[in-house]
Length: 113
View 1 (spheres, rainbow, N blue to C red):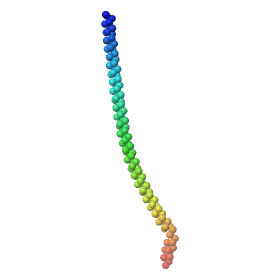
View 2 (view 1 turned 90 degrees about the vertical axis):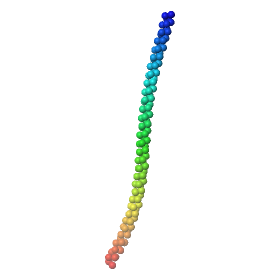
View 3 (view 1 turned 180 degrees about the vertical axis):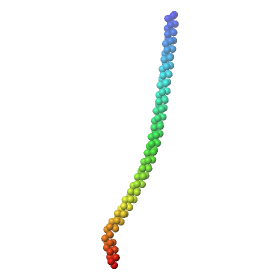
View 4 (view 1 turned 180 degrees about the horizontal axis):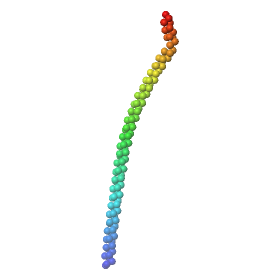
């Protein structure tokens, strides 16, 4: 009868030890889960912040691109106008140079007359 009581007490002690170990394991798992959730939330927050920063940078770059295109168009228009003006001046100068001798001769004749 002492052996049966001792066996029951051993079983109770083993059950309590197993229960304590299960509780410790559950606490460790809960702690690991909480750490995982904290790390995940921090990572999500960092990625979200990165997305916002990159979206802002992209928007700024798109604005700069539009401005650069507008500036380019304005410069190209100005270059075209200057090129046309240059052609007009060149044509005018060519006319003057071509007719210089005739005009000089006509003036000389006018002075002589």
